[in-house]
Image (tube, rainbow, N blue to C red; front, side, top):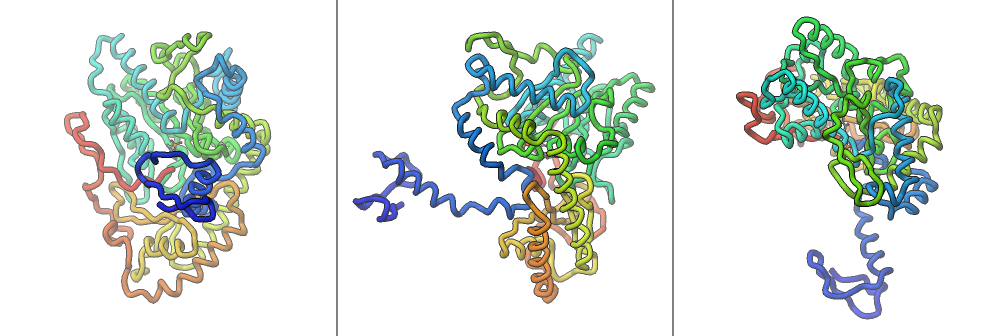
Length: 477
Ligand SMILES: *Cc1c(COP(=O)(O)O)cnc(C)c1O
């Protein structure tokens, strides 16, 4: 690539994909990289992601001051280590962990790592219990909805656990207690309940699932723990749904994760995993490191990782407090529900969810709309700068194609109205289309019909995974 002549005194040519042979002065290098990044999207118009795209300048300054801090170096950075522990204790209280001398949990790079750790703890606990009973440990399985985020498919694949994915059925787009129980047996290491589903923002019925598993234990003796994947919802429900019972209040809930960088409101790179008590995390998974000085317990997939995000999480907790988070999340829910109502009033759209659980809603086209697809709507909005993803649902609702809007902090009623105005502008043009232009490769557009397709799901025979899952379109983060 050639460098803008304004930046340098001599013409400069640089290879794009090879390490350049010589040096560049820092201002020129900065400008070149900066200019290229102009082409990245405008994050505030991105209604696809759950991940934080804006923090206050004070948080940004604090993070910049801490970019050099390595989270693993707890002896070098004892204050950072202590802020992490305080965050864990705050979350333990928020999620009603039973009183204990100290909370059990840690920060991670995100929910994916947190889910790996939670899954490993479930697997190891199951192995210990089975070995103690003189039973085989070669065929563990994990029960969850087909709507789980891809990290759970990874967990099952990477750690040789059979994924028992419960399909969607008709208007049921996530787990039901009855389906969970029907899929569990003595080899089930745990059940994953998602608060809320990335496909449509709905909460899975954690309390009902726990009650059904209590019943199962009474009749069969199988004591199956539940992990709540609260990547988004564990930072929404405590503030917006105080009456919902979903957390450690339920004795069967063994662990909960959340993404600090989603509704925890921190820039990408932080998640949290908590266990209800020390007994829920087998001691033999925890390493003690002393070569950095001190003797620190660590349970993580990474070793070195940035400390700045954890510090920014503590900043947010301190800065916003319970009431601040409540105002932020309430506002998101209000914007989401209002926008969902207005979209349903436009005519062509049918809501699957209303934004009254996660501030996220999915909607599809009414059956009578035949000239355009949700993919066409997505493309039309793209021309106005909005990123509203369209995707098909997994087994057995691959016939269903939807649009999804994720409302995050900073997406105001004002911006929502601008998006609605753009949608209103586009609808007459779309209505003149004779046929859908996009998406026919994904969907049959036979709305409402529920016929199974078997092309996109993992196959497992004999309890073992025989094929890497050919994953449906990933809907998260
Ligand atoms: C986003 C998400 C994840 C993955 O979280 P990361 O923080 O992006 O690793 C896992 N589960 C659910 C339900 C999610 O929404």
